[in-house]
Image 1 (cartoon, rainbow, N blue to C red):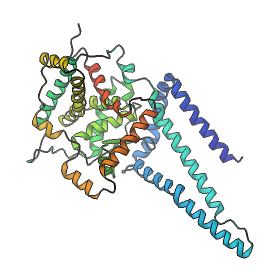
Image 2: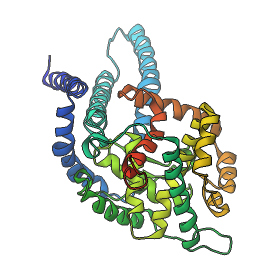
Image 3: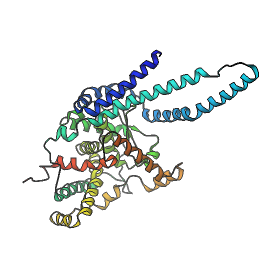
Image 4: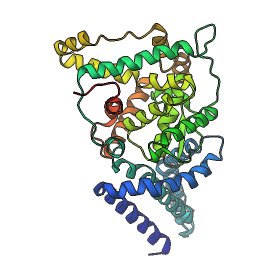
Length: 395
């Protein structure tokens, strides 16, 4: 066995060992997130931050090309060369193997890439799933169950703030927000907001690479995705076609992943917290708007499960009405953009969305989150815990 094969086998064993340790030791993961993971942000993250474009997006395209080559193009070429070799051998008696070194070298390279991808996924993604929860780190002793009235109080507070900030932000003659900051400028302000809440939650302090606008934002729209954290490049990538009011909260959400909070409900909560603590009303509005649907959906679920009980709750605490302006602002992508996207789409949006949801759901579940994508909505519990004792009076 040559040296390169020994190194690759050692790397595979290392990856397996780290994953096994992560699944069995929360203390190891907590130590890793607090002391080792920041090193990758401050080295590899700073390097990828030097590029104006999304390095991770380019790496994914390169990965797709490599997979096509490995499973289709190279085998076809290999078969053609084998046929040519057979013809040459039959006519000349020569048994020269055409391009044997190339094929061997290509698949050695392919194996190396797979190992590197596995290593990056382990160090920058998988291990993060098995650390202590945000509530265990910073909300010890918090309740886990809340009354219907308390959920309504929280939802009403968010509705009130949305209604307020919807009237404060500047708009054009069509009623659309006129905030024109680039993703880079927004990410600078969000980094400041993250530093502010990092004073209370130390793991959120430190360096944040600038967020990147996604070139393939149209495809992200089809996936109904607002942003991506790329563990291969330590980047936050943002859908720039979607509603601009969603972008600050999305940047903060992806920034939470960069500091070790990989669970989606925790990233949603941190994104909310960063935005509502920012100085700019546009960012505050983005934060409150980012959790409005989760709260409304949770109320609907409770009502559906027990209409009579929830009717009593709404009689005690009436539901505050969402203003018409907030309703107009609370969208993902404008209709004209959907028309443009669907018109030029290679694959229809419904199919892309289903495949994306299935992939994301499986990816989350594989890492130990049993409810998969449904975990996004658990941000409601974190919000209730955060405001417990402030909005709610405990007896």
